[in-house]
Image (cartoon, rainbow, N blue to C red):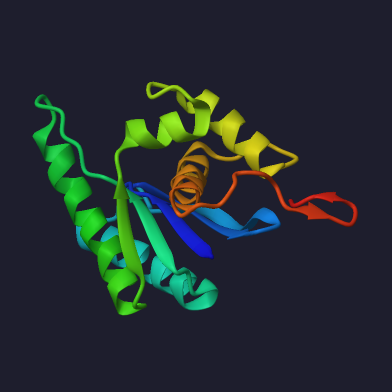
Amino acid sequence: MIVLGVDPGLRATGYGVVEGSSAGIHVVAFGVVRSADGAGLSTRLLEIHQHLSAIVGTHRPALLAVEDLYTAQRFPRTAILMGHVRGIICLAAAQGHVDVLALPPAAVKHAITGFGAATKPQMQAAVRRLLGLPSPVDGHAADALAMALTALSRAGYALRPRALSGGVAP
């Protein structure tokens, strides 16, 4: 099963593609879609949509896992902007005929680290360890990979790196 995890953000949207099988888990691709600081909302949304549509087209995930929308009473504008980004993400998924699973941030943190209030560095370290990655991963990409890993775990896949002839998957 191939899962695309997405960490929505207007300036930086993380993505991570992970494959789960009976042999374990394997990273297929990950990265960050970054928008130029001076770009307007519509330009940023278009860039995010184009990148994610290309990723969906290339990797054909069975599922897209995205961070569930949450609000902070003090920052309602942030929630509205994230709603725009999540809408674009869901549109890219729908156009690629991919189901969407929304996951609460605390549930993802708990699934990956065992602690629902884990910090970004704790999440990055846990994702790196779970996937057997040789070097640190950008925080947005790590969050996206954590989304994908949590979705795979919920689908019944064991979160252990797939063994290769020379070691662990990159």
